[in-house]
Structure formats: C-alpha cells, structure tokens
Length: 437
Image 1: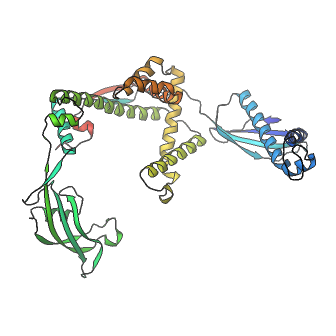
Image 2: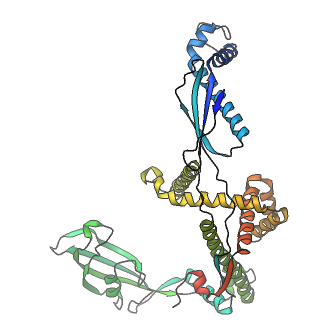
Image 3: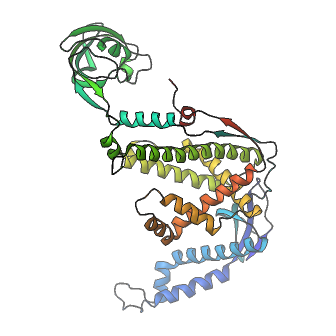
C-alpha cells in the first residue's frame, strides 16, 4: 500500500491516495477462494471437492472485490490513525490513474470533524423569565380542567356562543346549482369556535330550534377547495338542536376525577400548584436553553461535515414517516422531501459538535450523582418510582440518553456563567403562551 499526503479541497474534506499491490491482491484472493472451496456445494460434486478452477470461475470476481475492499479499508484505517484524523462518515473510494503497472491506484475522499476552540460568550445577553405561581394561576388551571370536562345539555333557548348546535344546510351557487361540500344533515358544531365560515356562526346565533334562515356566503379566496375559492353562494339553514355547555362543579367528585382519592379540594389545589411549578420551571429552562443555543451558534460559526448533515436529514425523514404511520397515514402516500429538513439537520449537527467540544474541553461530562438525580426526577411522577429507576439502569442506551441530557444541561450552565443574564418577570399567561383576555 502507498499513500500521498491528503489534499484539502474544502475546509473539512480530505483525500488519501492508496495503492494496492496486484500480486498481493491476487494471492489473497486465491487463498480465500481455497478456504471457501473446502465447504462450497455445487451440483455434480461432493461438498468440498469442487475443482479450484471452477470455484474461481464462479466466485472469483466477487471474492476479489471483497479482498480489495478489505485491503483498502485496512490501509485507510492505518493512514487515518497515523495522521490522527478524526473521520466523519464513511470515505468515498475512487479509482485513479497510475503509472505503476504493479499496483491498483485509488483515492479515499472523506470529511473530518472540525477542530475549534469554543468561542467567546461574554457579549451574549440572555433573558431569564421569572414567575411565581399564584392562587389565581391555580384558579385559571382549574377552569381549563373544568372546560375539558364540559358536557352539553339540550335547551329550548336561542342558540348562543359556546353552544353545541345541530343544523341541516343546503347550498347553491349563483346559478342555483348545488356543489360539493354544499349540503349536510345533522351537522354538529360549537358555535363561535370558527368550525364553519363566519357567516354560519353569525346566522345561527340567536336562532330558535326549528327556525329556518337563508344566508349569502362568499368563500375566501384562499379556501382549501380551489373550486369554491372566492365563490358567491347561498345557503338554507335549519336549526335542529341547541345544547348549552355545563361545567362540572369544583367539588369532591371533580377532585376524584383528577386523581385525588379522598376528593379533598385543598389537596387537589396543592397538587395542581405543584404541577404548575414544575411546568413553569420546565418552560423557563427551555426558554433560557434556546437563547443559550443561539448564543453558542453565533459564537461558533464552524463548518460541519456534509456526511453528518445527510445522516441527520435521513433520521428526520424516517422520523416524519414513522409519525405519519402512527397517525394512520401511509407514508408512501404523503411526500416527505429530504430538503425540508436540511436547515434543521444542519443546526442540530452544528450544535452537537459545539456541545461535544465544550463538554470535552471544559470537562462537563455527566457525573453519576447528576444522572441519578435526573432519573429520579423523571421517575417521580410514576406510581412506582423505584421500578422506573431500575428500568433506566437496566438499559445502557436509556441511561446514555440521560447522560447526554445531563451533559447538555452542564453546557447550558457553563454558558450562562459566561453571558450577561438579566431577569424579566412574565405573567402566567405569557409563559404558557395564552392570550390574556
């Protein structure tokens, strides 16, 4: 084997020129074919008694290719180790011209991981949200839980916002002809939730059961059914049923429905408050972490190996297809284009390289006590926490996921110590992404 020094064609690409001696290749091929001949089976011959010439004629090209690949891999590995190159992805082997008739010449083209020192974060500014959970926040959460358990009771009064109504409707175009999606019987929807076009909500509100009404409707220009986009239509509506919302009382039964066995309202509120505190902390940590990630990206504008980006793109594509299957859709019927994930994949790979470098250079690897604390926190909400802890520690891969999360948190804390952190008080609704109305 021979090699020439690598030539840099882009910031991370390298090239190693390799040569394989033809005599050594043929000798190794014959040796492997002879070993193979001891057990090969072929019609007309006893096992292991097939003439070598026939074995070579049948399998020679395949075995020669295998030997050549093995030889190139061995040579490539030695050169990479000798030059202490940190290879990212598999090399691309290309044949090349050579004046040496005793050797076959190849080039191995590959990428290496970027080498860099973590950038300066002293000018980065991080805003840490602050929020203390108050009784009013618990009240809001209880109202949300009540609305999630709403039931509807039939009423004779006129239809109002938030009612569940049942209608028949029949629509026609300006020329009086019906159209697809223009007719339905016993159609149920919640009034005022935007489930139908606004004209329907406005028309049905205030109607009595049995009342009929005719309305003119112009479909939006961006309506999902292209044949109706911008169309002027007329609908005849009949209101058949009105059911008003009834929220459960905050009582013993309500508390039991939320998992408080003895139905104690105070215990229910305390548990909701504790859960809110955990959720608030999680959201604050996520907002801070996202800012840290952006700061790290700005401070470390590094090139990334295309091989790693392509691998991450494929992982994201596979995940999207799996998600479609889980939702009952056939992935082959829904196009999932790799280019949709390019930016996301590149960002993930870049952050992964930055995190790995910071962890290594600053010695921020997960400590056993940190891993244990995170596992116990994850197990806290389960009925049998001890069993969940054992479940994590039984599987090295599951534990490795926790170790990676701990290391990420260590990097975030390290970065925060080097940035300018200011605090800003947020309301409960702001942090939760709700509209304050």
